[in-house]
Length: 87
Image 1 (tube, rainbow, N blue to C red):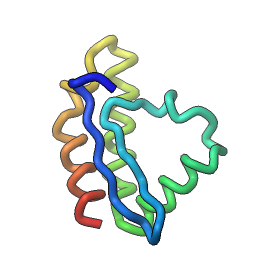
Image 2 (image 1 turned 60 degrees about the vertical axis):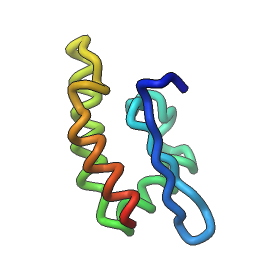
Image 3 (image 1 turned 45 degrees about the vertical axis):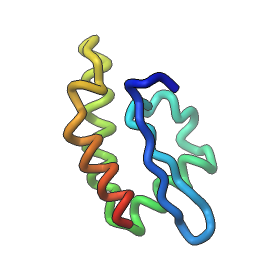
Image 4 (image 1 turned 180 degrees about the vertical axis):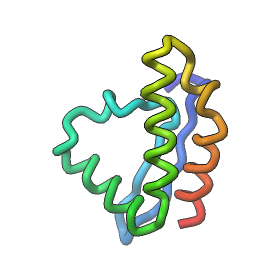
């Protein structure tokens, strides 16, 4: 992981979920992956799903536009990170 990316961990009933603000939805792999499903379940339980969807849409659009999503989606990354941290 480079210095420009960051991560946040939050426990979820014994397990842990890591949010990398430099990842796009394409890096998750298949939407059927158990890791992705567990992450979405965690977000739904903690009311963070709305923030994740906004962040993910920003990242996807920014990448399509050829821009740096870490800069363009910084505010949404912070909101999502704070939601996960407080959960």
